[in-house]
Length: 459
Image 1: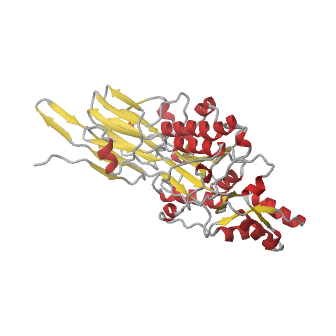
Image 2 (image 1 turned 180 degrees about the vertical axis):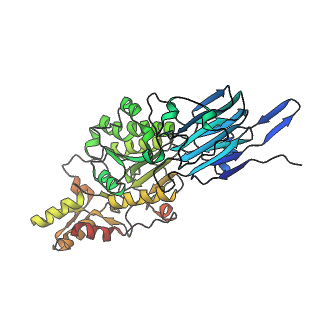
Image 3 (image 1 turned 180 degrees about the horizontal axis):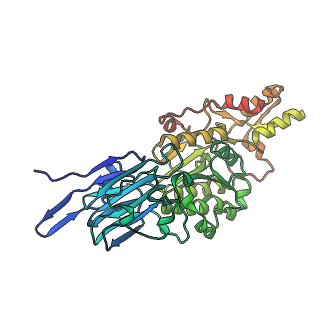
């Protein structure tokens, strides 16, 4: 005959979970698995990554603490005695003010998500309860608190508060209608002033947006000092993207494209952040018809080499989306803007016709990442480019000219070798076609690149 089973139960407060713990007892006493990551996460408990274990011993029955809404998750259980636990949702949103209570003994534990106010009243003398938390305690950390006797929460205290032992501080907490709800963690956009960064800021208007002057990803000390507890997702659009200059600016390229992402991956591991990072078709040598996400990298130049090194670092973060893309066009200086200017100026440039790939607009990259995050697609590497057939740069230029009222024939078609004559250019992959089958399998359909191009040129 089997013993009691481990169970996880939902409550009226979103994310607040009750865990029924099997307690094995005999003449010697009892034993329980107080925290068992594999079993509990399989039953729906978040893999919240505890980093600190706190123990609270209460001498007398009636000791009452709270209601405190800390900015971290916690897993509360009792070692000996009994506790009445009460929780009030103090997060922004429709569930603000929802309350729940339950008695906790050694067979019951409760997972409390960030921003849910929690309070405990001991029901026996010499009661000990403990809790795991996933942030180290920080001096001066401020968070909402609530009056234990708030009439809206209407917590049914077993021992009247007039008879309970309560700290002076907890006797003066505000009522619910005076509480400022705890805001959710928000995304952080790094490299917000670039073409991709601007598209990400538009797609994620609630994000905090910073550029290198505010947060330099190559500065380890600045990264350590950043308030990561305020964020849940890091969108890293910072990079050294000058392909030709990278051949001589090697230190700068490696710092921005490899060392910086490595530091961010370590931060993401430590703070359980989702790290979103962008890579390039330049990590490949361009000899294949197209590339899948698991193809081996083989970069030709310094830019591609530094991006490939950054890729290897980013995938060490447990929660990562590494987005490889090609031929990026956005709001700013780029190939399409140059061709449109030349068309208006009456020029007839020679454009490379033997490099093949797909245009990718920053709006599509931002939309794809929104999709990955919203659908909680499996973490990993995803190729994201515009849809439709592969084209050459000359094909793109001809389309821009036509949209600007010029003849497609006004574009001269040259080889890479002809174009490079007399110029100090970095090597480029002849084919940078990235397969998008993987992200399409998650339900995302890239818009045809030429359709996006026409809309972009039209303004």
